[in-house]
Amino acid sequence: MLVSEFYARTNYVLRGVDDESPTHGDEDATYWLDTLNRKKNELYEDVSKNWVNTFKTVAPNEPGTVATTATTTLTGTSTYFTDYAVGDEITVSGETVRIIATITSDTVATVTVAFSNTASPQTFTRTTIIATGVSAYSLHRSFLGLSGDSSAINGVGSGAYITTTASTREDLAVVSPERRTPNYRNVYISGLFPQYLNFSDTIVSTENIVGGTLLTPGYFMPDDLTAATDVLPFLDPNWACLAVASEVAFNDITYEDRAEALNVKANNLFMQMVKKNRGLTYNTPRSIPTNVKRIRGTRVS
Image (tube, rainbow, N blue to C red; front, side):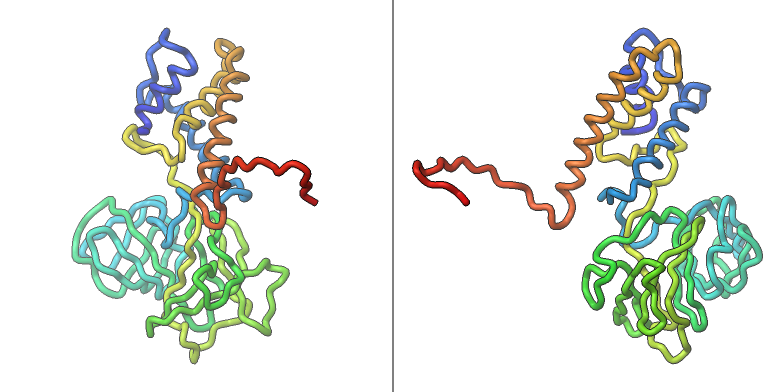
């Protein structure tokens, strides 16, 4: 469902057919879109559920956009370059990989080799490179949580791992901060905006992971919806229509008598989304219906 369709469907469940739906950019549409983005955040920040549609094996595009001018300078808009480190890799849309040389501020950085094009605005990704003497690495700003068995070592389900320059894989044991120990390498997550993946010991130059790539497959917050052509990032977008309509009704005396019923419908769709999400996750086999008659005179102890 597109944002433009969201306006029409939310308008219908809230007002019926007695009013035109908002137009993207007008006062009502802006209010509804802001409410929609808050509902998105509330849904996906629930740590008790890992929504399959937010899973990514590698981090998504970094926040903001950048401009290149066929030089080594990278200029950002709404970016967070200070989250990164010298030696990390940047890949700008339409360019090959570049290595960060300097970081001046959140919006100004340089790379070791000049960009090929003059272009803006461009999306970009960042790859975290393991360096000597570093013990903490910033995670993507939209990072919600790791996937898999965080404590697995040398297993497919490990929560975080490093791909070394020799193309080997080094799995990391992810523990809670209070369980960290310098006697055995593990990592833990701390901080906020951004969060950091911290090593319990400092990496030394002789280790094979130096120069390797840090990977944290997991769950990431979908971007805020801004354009009429954006797609709603929910397993059932009708839930979003009802949830927004319920809040709008609650805050509007004209429709407040509909708020409770709309909220009930939204909650019903939410439970259906939970069941759908559970059915798509690992180790949740569906029960097989049976119809076996009990033999007379027997009892199951």
